[in-house]
Amino acid sequence: MTRIRNYFLTGLVVAAPIGLTIWITRWFIDLIDTWFTPILPDAYQPDNYLPFDIPGLGLLIAFVLLTLLGALTANIFGRTVLNVGERLVARMPVVRSIYGALKQIFETVISQSNASFREVGLIEYPRRGLYCLVFITTQTKYEILDRVEHDELVSVFLPTTPNPTSGYLLFVPKDDIQVLDMTIEEGAKMIISAGLVEPPRRKGDAAPEAVTVGNARLPSA
Image (tube, rainbow, N blue to C red):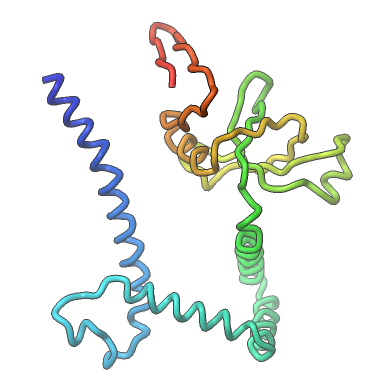
């Protein structure tokens, strides 16, 4: 029975990530297809001529439309139309706040995609002796830096477990951050798994000893 249980758990570990990845990918493709496939006229719908569905057609349509939209707004005429539309939105009390916040978020993420979240750091939070993983974003500047007594502050994102998309923005003195060797992906996996999935040990690192907590002895990584 022990061997059967081990075989079952091993099979679960192998099959669950594959199955969930396929399910999430299919769900995303179906969602995009639901949004964009109806844009095509009925005369051009492949489903009317083929005995089977073509998954990913809406994703292809979305890619083409977004590319055309980007090319349109890159010229003078497109920018003029966009500016007129943004001025109209700016006159709407609630909509302008939502639109302005979302636009700023997307512009920041896209423009700084090559510079943001490049390093994983370790800080003492919420008190001395307790440590948290953070994603280092950028150097803090302007008013926030002028109002504190430190010469250098670093803006970091402290994600929550098990959902790393939510968290806290912290401004930490540069000397209080320990930059780790793990990648952003490794740090995200560790946060999502609540510490169960740790990055592999780097060469030259000594193997940690097992730690005893209460009556349980935690094995080394």
